[in-house]
Length: 296
Image (cartoon, rainbow, N blue to C red; front, side, top):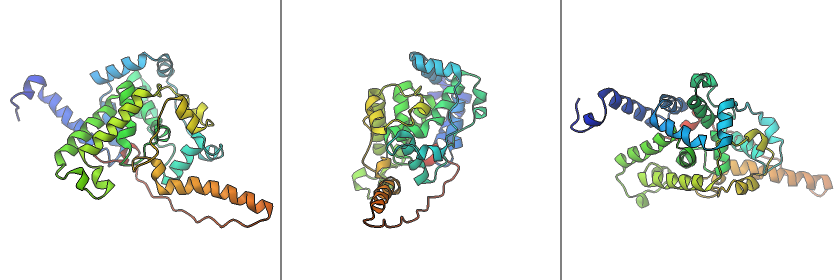
């Protein structure tokens, strides 16, 4: 099939390649593999060259890329043993409340064994993705995904994440047929271009105002108080609304339950009362998706 104008700008092969990328982005909510593959296919693209040049301005990021430093694996029990309110404790508690595997991210072999700088950049982005959720406050589901990825788009123009933002706007715009203020549920509103634009804008602004996050030594920061770390990194985290993990009742039950249990244990030790036993909480089952929690 020919086009009146596109044929002047790109070859049929390039147009077909774009449609394949668009298909992967559209399937990002079904499987994280689609998102990983999307970024892998863009590793030799012009947008990736832009990404590399922006990261090269940061000496710490450049050293990290050259060293090919790996992330994890993380010990959930050890992280949960860290002080309540710390980055590591919150990271393990939040993912545990959702039933997510804390070490679910691609092996280096998926990204060409990190042969090129672009391969390592892709690896690093997805290996630290959920830590970005914890740090920024954006929820780990359909509501917060566009916000958290837009932080990285603002800071270093990651091509896979930027493409996901663009496709979310485009595909949601195509199917919008009702004003957002007439939609009754958050789930319905999350599938509109207006909602996508709002979260993308919020993430871009957060990323522009924050200190560089790509090269953060996460393993060395796990014991740090999360609120203090956010302040140090100039991150005004999302703490309310359906696109914040702080608003998730399952997460709140876990975090508040820990505090209640500790208070109850202290009272019991003093001999005043016995704490009420905590109810068991069944975590949601999860598929193989990680970044693929949202759908466009």
